[in-house]
Amino acid sequence: MRLLLLIGFLLPLTVFCQKRDYKKGLAFEKEGEVLLAIDHYKQALYKNMYYSGAKAGLKRCAEARMESLLSEYFMARQKGDWKEAAKIFETVETLTDEMAYFSIEIDLPAYQEARFAADRQKIQEKSEALSASGRQEEMEKKAFIAFENGNYFLAYDLYSSLLASEPENKDYARYLDQSKAKGRMSMAVADLQDQNSRHTEALKTAMLSAIAQWSHPLLTMIEREDLNALIREQKRVFTGLFEESSTASPGMLKGVKHLLIVRLEDVRYKRNTGKPIGQTAYEKVRSKVFDEAGNWRINERYLPRDFFEKSDHASMTASLHYKLLEVETGKILTANKVLGTVEDEKVVSTYNGNTGTLFPVRNGEIVITGEYVNEFRASFGPQKALKSETRLFHELEQQLAAAAIAHLKEFLLGVSL
Image 1 (tube, rainbow, N blue to C red):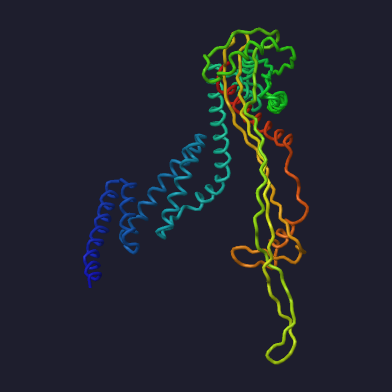
Image 2 (image 1 turned 180 degrees about the vertical axis):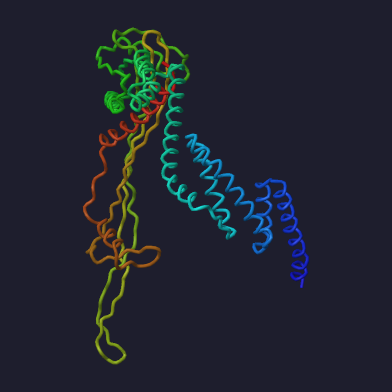
């Protein structure tokens, strides 16, 4: 009863609202405000899709709007303003889709339909060309800002890309040459060895390898073994890497403008062998029994069998400290600390019996067919040994070197040297 009363109350209100929207649409249509009229006619139809007056008004205004859009479109087309033409074209398609929602078809003259169909591909091609032009302008702007800010690595990369698209552009070539001249960087990598960092020399090699993979044209790596004097000077201030001042004691080394100092700390290797944990699998057992009729038949049962699982786990952790120095002034350009961890784990299963007769349990049910059974039985086969300490460290140094060089690349591409 209450529902009927509510419907009886809302129905007149809905009718009143749709008529109000229709009258507003009609008033705006008479004033020539087609867009506002379309909006109010649509609101009336949202409340009642069968409102014939609103639908007829919407069709009139949509056709008038379409005629205006077509006029603007062909004018833009004649001027060669394909950006504006593409924008109008999208508006036409949106209007067509909106009218289709209200089951309204807008009839265009045959020649306009044909021209629209012919222009569709051309507009798409022109729009893509304009988008490419916009990206070119944006890249040019970024390249100029990078050059003005002294970010020569980034400026070199951007102007290289720009010059590849416009090989004859003299401005691009000039900025590229200036970026190369001003941003050229010669760098050596030195390691601070001590009693607690016996792996540092290997890490230095990994750092050089990671830098070589980047292979930026402005970066020249200098292999120098005779760095002991400079290393001894810098070693004094390396301990307080994050607490020290922004400069280190000056050092000089002929042919090296920048020095990347690396040190490995807290290298720890752990290996744990877990205790065997008892598990349960099931073995299929067949036996002959008499049935109720006194005949022999085969009876199948799954009997529990105990087996053991033991996990072996190895891990290696370390922290990599590094800083980039300007050799002539001793200024610390950037410093960072990277943490790394690598792990390896093996689970060994043992069973005193024929593992080919065992069936595993998954989600509380015995699994008797499928790939899961094969994987379970294979776990009792010969197990691969855990990775050695040397192998783990090799993976760890690659991880640390990659993380450190990634940060260094961000610095060189975004900060002036």
